[in-house]
Image (cartoon, rainbow, N blue to C red; front, side, top):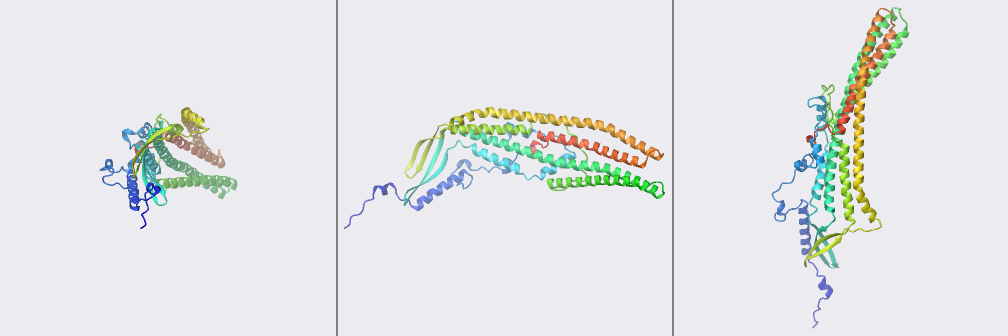
Length: 452
């Protein structure tokens, strides 16, 4: 009789797991991990999540969805009010442009808030599965739970970085929305300027045509040669080319505005709306520099923490039970470690200098725009006096031509000169309005914060 063979030590150390046992362990791991991410959630696995409806994704895309928990930057953006008159043409154009916004910037803000929410829970232990092949026929499944004890502020810095990224996404939303409105209003101003200048060119063209009829009658009666007719015909051709250019400019601006707003704007939108003084608040570029500085500071603290030793408690769950332990991590020493720590310590000074530089740049930009507006208003006032004198001279030339003291050529030249000066004078209000819109755009005052 052949005696039964006793199992060897290696066979006892690596018992063969039944496939059902392995599958059950992996399924349990998948259920636990998916429950943490909002996937499969058994009724009794996560009691703290029961009877709670998921957050509305649309609320995460609103600028002021945090209410009292909003950061100072987001609260500042949400409190800003538009300088556009509520019942004017500007407001109607702005409403159409905002309504056609695809909402990509708001979606980016929603994603940033989700990342910040995930980072806010980085203080909880992490659970990770581990599969070990003990032998050719043995597969062991384990769960590893890790809880950092000493991380030198790394997790806090990660939360600060995520919050700074939310601020940066909110600033990007406000900046792009104000830029979108500025683009639409600039197109509207271009169309209105072309309309006003084309009306001046049309009146001048009508006067020139009347003079051409007079000279043609003189030619037919033998009182004049064709040289005067050629001069007037050339002046008429130039004025008609200007009129055609104005019409084309207006049509193109309206087409671009329709593409931006999703539909053709109403025909009754005319005129300019006076804007009040732009509020003296931090420019959006300054807020962006502050948010980027906060991100840089958080990254510096994370880099510093990664260069220092850390301590964590861990536990391994296997078929043999729970095995507790301590882990030493976070140490990445090298020849460049002193420079890494020095760079992290020097980051606050760099951030302060960059923010101050951006503040100076914004102040110079604001002063420059205000100075250009003042210059244009001075030129507009002076040009109005010159235009009155020019139109008076045109009436005088007409009277002198009637009594035979002026030639038809002189009257034609004076008519064209008066039209050019009147067109230039008509452009001043639109140039001033463009600069005012630039001031409001830089200050984030074209869109109400509650509408972002």
